[in-house]
Amino acid sequence: MKRAVCTSAGSFGPGGIIDCLHVDIRTSYTLVYTDTMNDVARTEAGGYRERLLAGAVSCLQEKGYARTTARDLVAASGTNLASIGYHFGGKDALLNEAIAEIFEQWTQRVERSLFGADLGTGREMLERAMRELIDVFGELRPQLVLLVEGYPAALRAPVLRDKLAQAYARARTAGAGMMRRAAAELGVELPMDPEVFVSVVVAIADGLMLQWLLDPSATPDAHQVVEALAAISAIVT
Image (cartoon, rainbow, N blue to C red; front, side, top):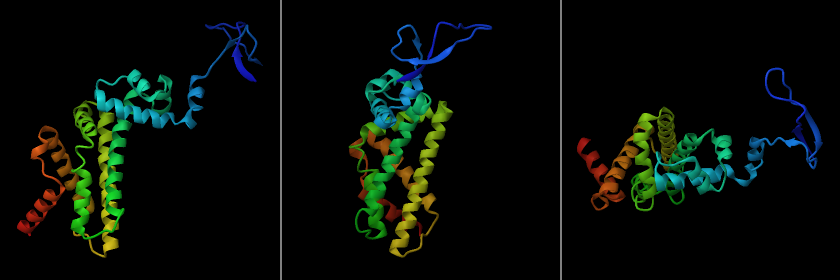
């Protein structure tokens, strides 16, 4: 087994050189140079990136954005400090990616609820979507706290702000795609720009999320929200 090593023949500094030779790794008098990034790269098959994301989500839920340290992330993921830089470029980038991952997972839940069974009517589909946006607050409370804590941090961190904005944009695009697919399968025309509709639905869910965190008992459920939207529609049309 051969490895590039640097012997003591050279020196650092102006005019200095380091003589690098390929010698047997068992040679005791050589200084073996280890490329840390290559070591990290070899762990790719072990799922370090996924473990880091899962650990980041866990840390964010337990400690919040501002209090999570790189060592917390390493302990939670069972990885190492070098792997954070290799896979994400730094701690903040990893935390930002973890927040975006929560958005992605939530969007996927909504899509599964819409198309995992018979479509039903448009109203029934809307209520199923609202159940995955609203009636899951109790199940997702740690994630809700994380998202709420992320907003103030985003106001002071342009990179996080952009990441959250991109997550909302992807949610709008995905939601609009679901609406177009549902309309095609139901054989109906969409009455408005689906991205505008999705923005309104997400705004309702965000607002109810804040209310629920403060007073769960006073927050309407998905069925009540759809009833309210239907009543508003009847008033304004």
